[in-house]
Amino acid sequence: MPLEWGYNQENGPEKWQHSYPEAGGTRQSPIDIKPVDLQTLNCNRKLTWKYVPENTLEVSNPGYCWKVSVNGKGSELVGGPLDGTYVLEQFHCHWGKTNDEGSEHTINGKKFAGELHLVHWNSTKYSSFAEAAKQPDGLAVLGVFLKPGKKHLELDKVVNQLSKVQYRGENAKLLVPLDPGALLPENSGYYTYMGSLTTPPCSECVIWIVFKEPVEVSQEQLDTFRSLKCYCSEDVCPCDEFEGFVKSNFRPTLPVGQREVKECRQ
Image (cartoon, rainbow, N blue to C red):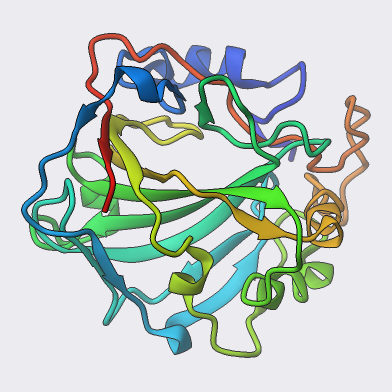
């Protein structure tokens, strides 16, 4: 079974709203962030997080990225633009076919080679991820830009398992504890706004927190991302422009509209 949505010419982002009407909404993500226009976020509490490395469980290939599932128990993301406590559900990555593109958010039109998303849900107000994903304040996603440079040692714990999840539907346990906090840039300010999931159903339920500073990953790590395949091992390779590889899995930016984008210098 091919994915009913994806990133090629047949099923790419411009087609999504035919099957997922919310993708045509006014609070969609990602956006181009223009720092010159921004309000400053007056937050009483600094944004803080804590994670339990042993609760980072397994990596999977859902057909359009790699994704790491997490037992959120003991994790918390609080402060900044958030009311209540948000717990980590999963993290995943977007990238491009070259290092000139791949991030979903852009800064003044500048694209990065990739973007990590750490997806949290509001456990103060809601009882499950599924319930939270239906609410306007249900999810909080940390966005981290990736740029080519030195090897990222914590991320390498995921990269080392990607050979086991080459095909869609495959998953592999992480063999060593992984600290999601080590994937975040140190001492970085951030931008925040109200947006959506960037993949179908594109629900408008996300408080976005996009860090200003990128983190470095190696060329070899980026190339390993691009080696994943979008189809199951028993299926025939789809003859799309990417020859069945997940080479480009980012949604283009969408209008900000009437939304406020705020900046916090932490």
